[in-house]
View 1 (tube, helix red, strand yellow):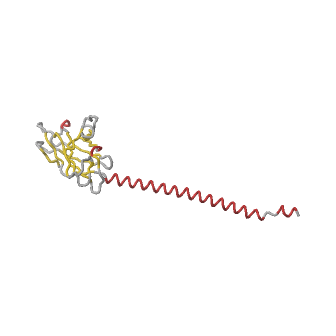
View 2: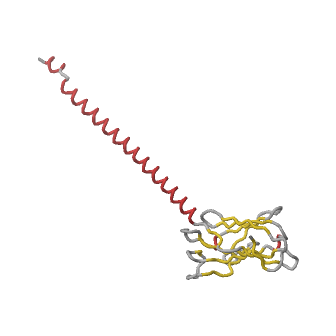
Length: 193
């Protein structure tokens, strides 16, 4: 009789099957949690990339009129004035954190910063002469506002028919490049086309 009880393993087979089933369910649950977590992480990173791209593309500036130049007595350009506004649907741009890079053929590019913002006596500074349609007294180019930027370039000796480039780099977003050429006769106040 004792032998009969010892050789009967029918009850343990069901218990082992239940343990294996529970183990498979636990492993599947952990695996699905890891996969869902990785999917959510990837989706979140993709969303951040899209938002960053949209923000950078929408915070650009553009010209809001002509590029005006003033001449010196020795027939070179003394300063260039540009009028800036936001692109359509763009977000505000801080003019104090905007960098302007002036480039002329055969010369090294020179960085200009806002003279009212920079307190470190940066050697090259542009001036924000006045703003148009400004409601608030801040340094942001907002919707419907136009800023008049004057860039002193007399030290570069830009004479007649010489080309130059002004690159406006806001703190966020794409830079805006303006290519111009001095007219054949440099004198007085000129509109550069």
